[in-house]
Image (tube, rainbow, N blue to C red; front, top):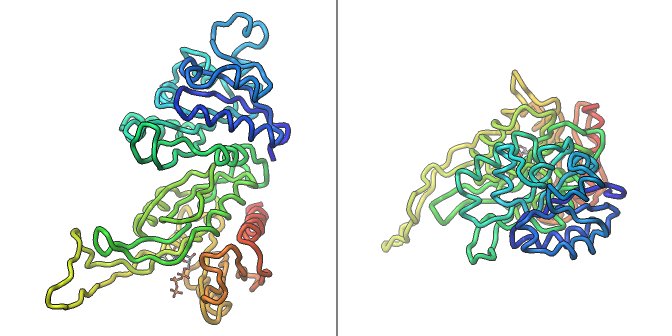
Length: 398
Ligand code: CTP
C-alpha cells in the first residue's frame, strides 16, 4: 500500500516525538521512504542521529542552512514528497499553520507545499481544549488538512484526557488512507456507526450490543478506495478508522444533528444501531431507590429516524443512501419492506438472532437489497463485507 511512497515527516517538539521514530520504522517496513525534518524543539526530544539512522536519510533542521539549500531548496523539499506528515503536531506548530506563518523550516515547508498534509496533534489536555487550539484545528480542517487523533488517555504530564498523539500504527493507517488512490478519490462519504446511548439519569443509560465493528470496517474500506470519509459514531468499542474525519456523539438526536451538519455527501452509509426511543423522563440528578420499594417508571418518545430523513430529502439528498436492517425474523421480507418504508437505495440486511453471533462478533452474513432484488452474500469477515460493499458503492457512484 505504501510501496515507493515518499513521506516528508516533520517532527515537532513534544514528548510524543519518540513515537515518531517508531513511525519511521513502520513506514519503511511498508516500503515508504521517509525524509525527517526536525524543528528546533523537536531536536530536544529526538536526536538528528536517531532520525537519520532510522530513516537512512539526511535530516533537515534549519531554514538557513546554506549547504542544505544548495543541495535541495526548501520549496523543492516541500514538494518532492507524496505526503507531508506532522507528528507530533504541537499546539505551536498548529497555530503557525493556521495563521500561515513561515518563520522556520517546518512552517515554511508547510506553507510552500502543494501536497496534502496530515497532522497528528499531541499536547496537554488543557492546551488541546483551549479555544485557540480548537479554533486552529477547525481552520486547518477547513483548509483541507487531514488529521489523526489525538487519542484520549493518561498523559506524560500526569493529566488524563484527549491530547495523546495517535499510535504509530494508526498514523500509518491514516497515511495509507490519505495516499489511497481509487475510484472514490475526491468523493465524500458519510458513515454512521456504533450504538447510541440514551440517558435515564446522569449515570444510567439505555444502549444496545452494537460494537461498531462493521461501521469502522466500512469506513476503512471506503478510504482504501480513495474516499474522504466522515465517520459519525456513537460510543463504540471497535477501533476508530484512522484517517477518517471522526465525529463522536452519544444520543440519537446528537447523531441526527451531526449528520445534518455534514451534508452534502456523495453517498451515506447508515451502519449505526440507533436507539429507536429516548427517555423523556430522563432526570438531571441520579434517581434514588425509594424506601417504600416503589419502582421508577420511564416514559419514552421516538427518536428521529436519521436514515429515513436523509433518504427522503427533497434537496441535497446523497447520490446513494445505504441503510442496514438488523432483523431476527423473516430477514429478507422485513428488510425489503424497510427499504420501501425508509426510501433508501440499498439495505444491507442481517440476521442478528443471538445464535448467529453476528452482533458484536467478527463475521457477518448479509443480504443486499436494492431495486434489483435481494442478493445474499456468504458468511464472511466484517472486513470482507465492508470491502465488497465499498466496491459496490464505487461502482454505483461511477
Ligand atoms: N436508523 C436511523 N435512525 C434511527 C433508527 C434507525 O438512521 N432512529 C437506521 C439504522 O442506522 C439502520 C436502519 O435505520 O441503517 C435500520 O435500523 P433498524 O433499527 O433495523 O430499523 P427500525 O427503523 O428501527 O425498524 P424496526 O425497529 O421496526 O426493525
